[in-house]
Image 1 (spheres, rainbow, N blue to C red):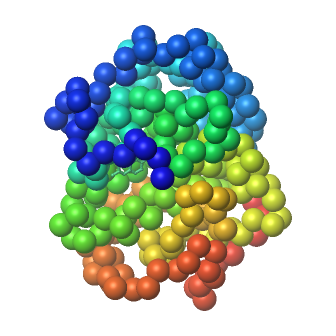
Image 2: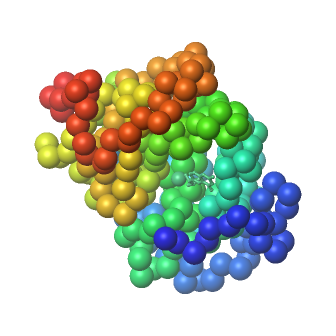
Length: 278
Ligand code: HBI
Ligand code: FE
């Protein structure tokens, strides 16, 4: 597992766990590393939902090297109402959920090394800034993220944190959407890996199941290999609507103690998504 995992705020962190991005600390090598990551990743735009490409372009992420959050924020705020804040890595649930509920996206302040540019087992600045930020350009998705943060703050007391965490994983990290252009990717963990995006969106070998809230909350996952199944939402409006109209407290109670489905394990209620229906 990665080394940037914190349960106590590191030196220099504020009460909300944010740290200065300290953009000046990045070396020419870091900027080159960012440029090579971004240049390869532009292949995913054609496989991603429209708002991802719009966000990428509007944020100008493909120009220059590592973006300075002080330069990104006025544009991000104007376009989406969100801002990006630097955090030292994976932070505890409470500050994470609180930041999302405040439309402050927590992005790591370190970049993966060029050595393991293909995959890394913890969110770094490339995963956060390239994978997550452009998706905030979809209004319904951005509102879903706020609703998710608010739900997260309540979930701890209701014993629903793990269930909610799997909802996030199977949508915000590895979700697919069947939108006007057809089947497209929107999950950040997927979009920061061209190979997995290509597989999930185009391969006849990939297993795709229509999204079902309870099903995803009970589905375990891998974090170090391709997901053995992907969930397809019908739209961001539908995902937001479900988040805003479902009593999560009742769902947590209904699912408490239920055995998890292993990654890739089928369930009798699964509605298979057929690629030819895209
Ligand atoms: N959950 N508690 C917690 N803390 C994090 O930093 C965190 C998370 N879930 C997902 C997540 N980070 C990643 O998606 C980052 O890319 C934001
Ligand atoms: Fe992430």
